[in-house]
Length: 173
Image (cartoon, rainbow, N blue to C red; front, side, top):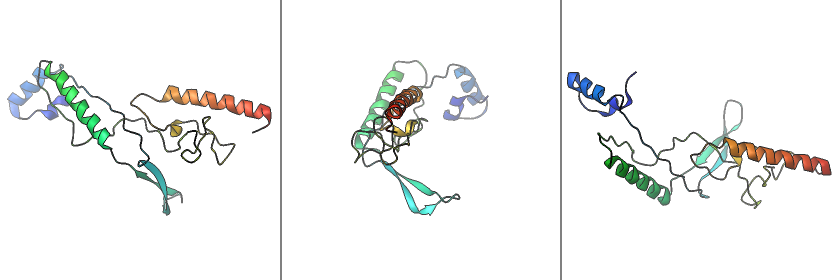
């Protein structure tokens, strides 16, 4: 397998190969995650005049990093470099030009909350406009960290199930 760090080292030929081998298997990759600020300027809508091959309106994502997001990103990079300064070995910083978006726990777009003007779902993941519709996946999250959301999704689903059971018992659903 081609060592990851080999693509970050300049050079070619015998000297290059020896340098790559010398560093293998001692390659250490450090990374850090920062939580993006939840802001009303970041939202998802649908494009009513443009549809996909199934006739469904396509989503339009409105998103920009805030100044706070950039400050957090710069601070994270400084902290990583400080850690690296105390290690032996070569450092190959790869921060890019701006914060990345490679965390793979996509959630949100169907906001849960107390205020009907700012949320689609109530606190039990029940749609406000369709009484018998419950959304118990990660869509109801108002924001997310780098942590895996599975246990929170399960807890919200159990809470919604208990609510549905109680509403059915009362004859309200």
